[in-house]
Length: 228
Image (cartoon, rainbow, N blue to C red; front, side, top):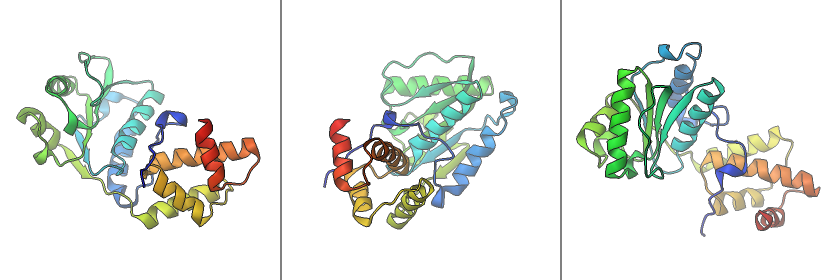
């Protein structure tokens, strides 16, 4: 059955608080520690961090959560992913550089990423990057691949089916919602399975159920998607 990818923009963005770590606790704690030096951005470690893992392991969720945390601290960041076809020049005002889906970078994006990396090191700015492969297996220019792998490297694991169900159940209980097994089956088979998207889907369902004063059922979810 084809899965539906939930538009991240439909609800609140990813946060570190909404990230259920499961087997990825070490990566989460590392990012929390790094972000904790908020009093003075210059005290953050300039040693790069690279996250890698399969689709749905939470790579993009964590990078966007870090971006949001830095924004709340008043910092601007450089953001580069495979959709940024014309990357801007490095900005000295950036508090950090975030690079997502590096395994998909074109030659132009790789050139920009390397330039950002060099400047970030010069100005002692943090670099957080993510991709689907370990650094040694990235099909990128050698100088960029080497830099991505010389710092902190964390492999992210996709949550198991029981872990996803447990998280959904816990999140629903916290909202005072009842999710029947058939509803949970529908959510896990018809929508993107990464946890960030599932949490945002739950927020949408909760809001729609309150608005329509209906219980959470499969027909309600279908009706919500038809109106979106």
